[in-house]
Image (spheres, rainbow, N blue to C red):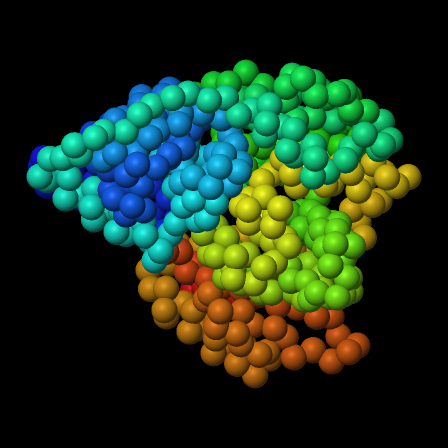
Length: 474
């Protein structure tokens, strides 16, 4: 195998997953090698390993290549076929088996990738095994893939009905008020999972929820818009449809349906921080009912709104502030025994879902909470969105350290600095002044600085945002 293939493989193994251009950076031969490296790293010979894939054109071929590589190293492959990422977490957790999911999540059609899990849906990052998998795979690419004396077996299983039934057992939606919901699946896997979980496609009883579907046809070429609800332009169709249909709310899922965004009846976004606060209250109440005397932990990352930690503490639980990052949050869920974790990126993690993230489960909690009170969603959600936020603003800079230092110097006497995951500065504001904080974080892979600002009001937020951006881009 040429050095270029090995170099390409090294380049597409990211901090938490594998992601690259199909055919150019990621090939079936590389996938076979990665599968073999994965099985070796987890000592998976003789045990079951789960593989699933999304609706991208290249995904079935990659899943088949993974099966070949895993079987060659002695693993017994259980292929879920077409599924969402959280379906693979369900299989990994309920069967206590390692798993691989073929998806590039919200990335354009030309990309694909792999999300690996250890048994019990535990995450794998560069620091916890992904680097070793990469190195083993590079060795197989260079020297050839050896087949063990007893190759593994292969079978296919559909878990959609079991997955839907399990989620229904976690959140009871049967007694809510009638709700009309527009769902934009973005031609991603939500088009398959939403009818199963919120409808009757998996044989479950009907709920008092009217689903108005948008882009439910599975199509990895994303003919309508990219399946990335974090980009405001990809929410426009949903926002219009919610208003036109007089719906109570809208839901948008990303390509592999593990993230969910919420839109109110006026077409305005409900922030992921607000969703985190709403779900946190429900999960804290559940934990208190189960174990009244036990300390309860809830995770939020450092760029979540202040309302999240305030809500957690106000409900009598302990907020745990973490760095940004998928596998990192999963590790923290396990280490702290947290009942719930929320990220600004609309990833939501649940202790009763093996500490893994599940956008559908978060949506169900929002539907349940909203459905048991009389207000419109905009009025209800306003309680959890009291502050002004900039959202994440990226700036390309030639010298990340110098730009960060400019900001640090300018605010040295005006706030206190926290060095968790970049730099967070919180204003030294007197009680009568509006509070503010901002975070400046470098990208792991590009010469970028990411800015997030929050303040008590729009005027203060805008002033701090503009001042910090000017310093970053000077």
